[in-house]
Image 1 (cartoon, helix red, strand yellow):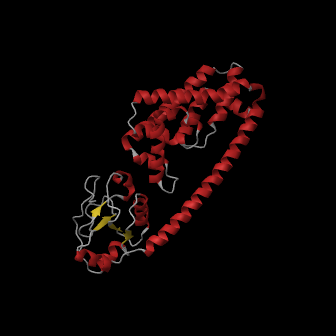
Image 2: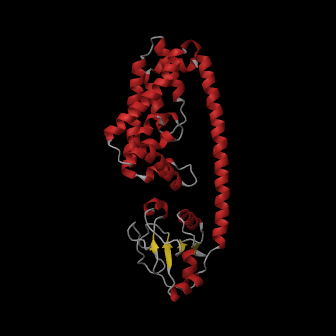
Image 3: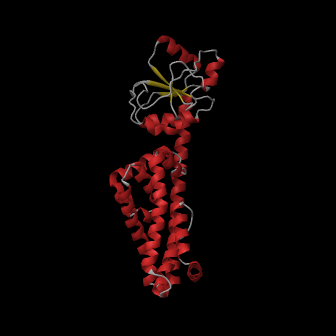
Length: 319
C-alpha cells in the first residue's frame, strides 16, 4: 500500500481522474484502493479531502454522462454491448431494464458499490429519458458517497493503512473467486440448457416439402425470415422479415400462442432460428419450428422465392 501512496504523491489528482475514467470504462483498475490512499494522504495534509471528493465527482460525471448520452441515442444497442458477456444479451437487457423500472434514477445512489449494476445504470438512465439535470444530480450524489466511503476509510485508518489494504485485498480476492465460481456455474447451466433446447428444437424441424404443402393447403402459418435488414435478399413468398439482433423491438407484437410459426435464415445452420424460437417460447408461443436446411434447401427444391419480403416493424408483424 505504501507504493500506492508514493505513486499517488508523485502524480497527484491526475491519478484519481485516470482511475475513475478507467473504472467507468470497465477496465480492471483498483480505484477503491487509490481513494483509500488519497484519504490517508489527506490526513497527513498532502492532499485535500474535499478536493479528492470534488475531483472524483467531476470525473465520474464526465464518464457517466458519456454513457448516459450513448444510452439515450443508441438505446438497446449500448445495453447489448455492456451485457456482451451474457449468453443472452436480450434477456440481460430486459432484467436490467426491470431493475431500473422498479427503482428508477435512485439506483444511481448505490450503483457504484455494486459490481455490474454500475456498468448499466448510466446507459439505462439515458435509455429511459431521465432528464439530464436529474441524472447528473443523482449521479453526483452516488459518486460522492462512493468516494467519501473509501477516502474516509483511508483518512481514519491512515496509521494502519497496510493492514486496511491487506483486508481489502483479501475481501476483494474472496469476492472475485465467489463471483467467478457463481458466474461459471451460471454459464455452464445456461450452456447445458441451451444445448438441450437446440437439440429438441432441431428434432422439431419442418421440411421444405411439408411447408410447401401447408402453404398450398392454405394453413395458417406465420413464416419468419431472419435475414435482418437485407432488404434485397430473396425469401419465401408470404414471409415477414425481422432483425434477429434486435428482438426487443418486437416485444409488443401479439402472436396467437396457437399459431404455427416457421423460422428460416439464409444458411443451413439453425442457431439463429433457435435463439429466436427460445425468445418466442418465453412469450408462450409453443408451436415454433425451424425450416430444415433453411432457405438454401427451399431453393434447392425449386420452390418459389421472391425479392419482395416485407421488413417487419412493431406495427406490421401479422398476429
